[in-house]
Every structure is written in C-alpha cells, then in structure tokens.
Length: 298
Image (cartoon, rainbow, N blue to C red; front, side, top):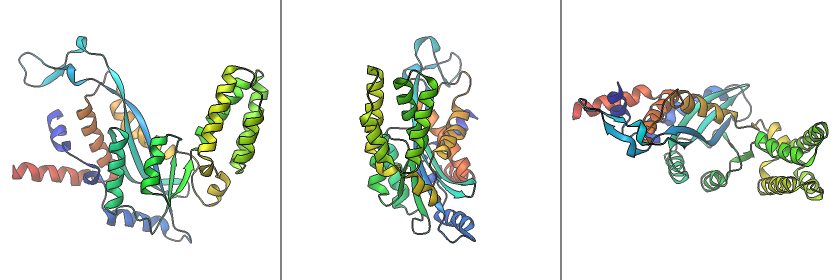
C-alpha cells in the first residue's frame, strides 16, 4: 500500500488534481441558479505546520529492501504546508471547488496559483472573486500580481487578535480592556478604520509592551486599511473571515499528517497531500486512472 501510494502520487501537480473548467462551471451555475447577483468565489491562502523528518534520517532495515528512519539519529522539525483553496458561497454553506497544499515555499505556491489562472480554470467573468487572507506580505504580493481586481478582505478575526493584544498590554483592568477592544472592533466593523488608527496614535502607552503592541497594530491596520471595509464587504455578500481556508488546512493537512507518532519526509508528505487534494477536488478517480495508464504503457 505504501509503495502503491507513492507510485500513484509521483509527479502530481496542481493541474493534475484540479477539476476541469466544465466541472467548475457546473458548480458555479448550480450556486447561481435563482440569484440576481453573481455568486461569490472565495480564494483563501494560508499555511499549516506539519511534522517532518530530514532526508538524512533515511536508512535500511536489515533483511528488507525498503527504507525506514533511524530514530536515534535525527531530530524532527515542523515544516509549513502552504496552500490555497477556492470555494463558492451558497447561503450559509460553502461549496468546495479546488484545493492545493504542499510543503513548499511561497514562490512555488505562487507558481501553482499562476498555472491555475493561466489555464483558465477560474471563471472570473461569471463570479465575484473575493480573496480573504491574513496580513502576511507574501500572500498579498501574489494576489496583487494575479488577481488585482478581486475584492481583497483582511481577515477580521486576525484584526481582532491585534486589538486584543493592545487591550491586554495597555489596561490592567480586564473589564476596561474588554470594553476598549469591543468598542474598537465595532468601529472597525463599521468601516471607521481612520478613527481606529487615530485612536491608536493618541493612546498613551502604559508600558514598553503596550508601546510595541500599539505600534504593531497601527502598522498592521494602516498597511491593509483598504482591505478592512467590513460593513461594505458584508453588504456585498463577501465573507469577513478565513474559516473556509482554516477548514481546508484541517481536513486536508492536519487530519492525515498530524497522526500520533507520524513524521514525514517532505517528498512523502507532498505526495499524500496531492492525493488528498485530489480526493476533495473530486478528481481522485481521474488521478488513479492516469496512474493505471502509465503502468500499462510502461
């Protein structure tokens, strides 16, 4: 089973596991039926840490041909599986379209995203594309290059985390801290990011920790102020949080790779992730048929 899995997944790319344009168009048409506005197609990008072992851990078990790790000789580490997910909003539920996750750097993820765009898999003319991500600079760099016309939303709950850090550092009274955080979150939700930034500038830090928290929050919000028009986004039917992407990290990466005692070589983890993406993209049968054809031709 181990050998078969690796053979079937060897060399898979995002285009191998992605659904066809016709399949995506059918999903869009189904969600769009009976609606007066184009459906919202959400793109989320994020990373999920997975347990890995170094290539230097490879060794051979006496009497057997396959390789196993010599545990006493290596130290484990956590690697980031960067990925993206496209999904449609259908009322209170989401409709999965396409996921791709790999232990890779941000350049490789950007290249995979570029392939998806240039192949024409994303029907930008029949959907309202929305990108919801946290404030990582490398994410928005690729979005600006590939989908500059998309509605860009800074994850509201990441913003809230910054505000709560300020409140905790600035106020000794937990009740006062909560009141300030909730009031500031409300202003932010109402689109008054200018008032929030002004309020942060006028605050008198009570400690060095508070000063750092205030400065970090101001820089974060000011850099992404055009992506924080949450009231406007909500009226347009766009999501405010990246929960759909976090869910993809969980059911594609975490559920399979973070099992008790599991530590993965990078190549093996990427092959497993590719197969799991194919499963949730609805293309696993096509991927396995491809493998069978390759075996016959060989």
